Amino acid sequence: MRPQSPGTSGIFVTGTGTEVGKTVVAAVIARSLAAEGKSVAVFKPAVTGLDEEGEPDHALLRRAAGSAQSDEAIAPYRYGPPLSPHLAAALAGEEIEPGRLLAAARSAAQGADALVCEGVGGLLVPLSPGYSIRDLAVELALPLVVAAAPGLGTINHTLLTIEAARSAGLEVATVVLTPWPEQPTRIEESNRETIAALGEVQVETIPRIDLAHPNSWPALLPVRLSPPRDE
Ligand SMILES: Nc1ncnc2c1ncn2[C@@H]1O[C@H](COP(=O)(O)OP(=O)(O)OP(=O)(O)O)[C@@H](O)[C@H]1O
Ligand SMILES: [Mg+2]
Image 1 (tube, rainbow, N blue to C red):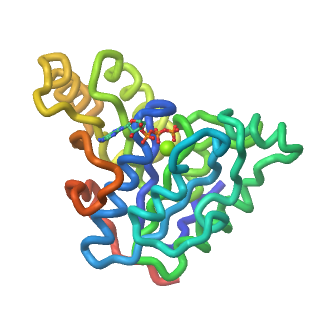
Image 2 (cartoon, rainbow, N blue to C red):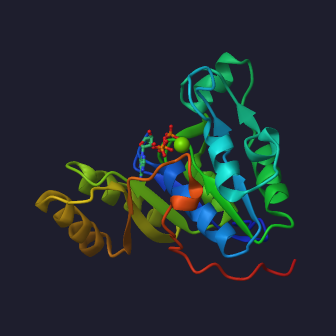
């Protein structure tokens, strides 16, 4: 299928898995763009685990971007149980429709200077039985940012993710290691260098931040966003 851009510049934040810092990375990038005066739209194809405590991803992303989008506009599919999206949808008696996701992402991007998308889990997570996060990233034609942990085990997870991305023709703009410790150990420093060398990729870091206070976050603009394309 031909990649279809949502017509706006942006990035797609994926990760080496679940709970690796995708939301933190996407939020910091969204906040950095907004701080430059850009209007930023955020998007997350599906949110699961709404039954659990804490600020859901779509709410944190909206807050970081300073966006006025509704829950529905940011995340068209939202489920209570903390499950893979295809399973959460099945238990709710439905299937996630790729066409609805693409339409929602394009609509979110419309009128914004930049679109910041966060995936769900890692690249090969199914949204529906035959449609993965990677398929969605390809159709949106956005460069990837890969969130990963700094510690032991991250080299393999990150290189696998980069390989899976590139094999589908996706551009990997950067890897972001998070939370990067104040005093990194030799392992963490080596992980950073090894991922950059073996993955032939830019590697950035984000220190531990206070999620409640976006004003205190560092700037992270790993991708030079091209101006919106004329449709
Ligand atoms: N730089 C950081 N500063 C503070 N907390 C961090 C940082 N990086 C990661 N974390 C913490 O690690 C945990 C996982 O991060 P996050 O929610 O961003 O992961 P995720 O990949 O988006 O997870 P999910 O798969 O559920 O969407 C969170 O508790 C988050 O606050
Ligand atoms: Mg998240």
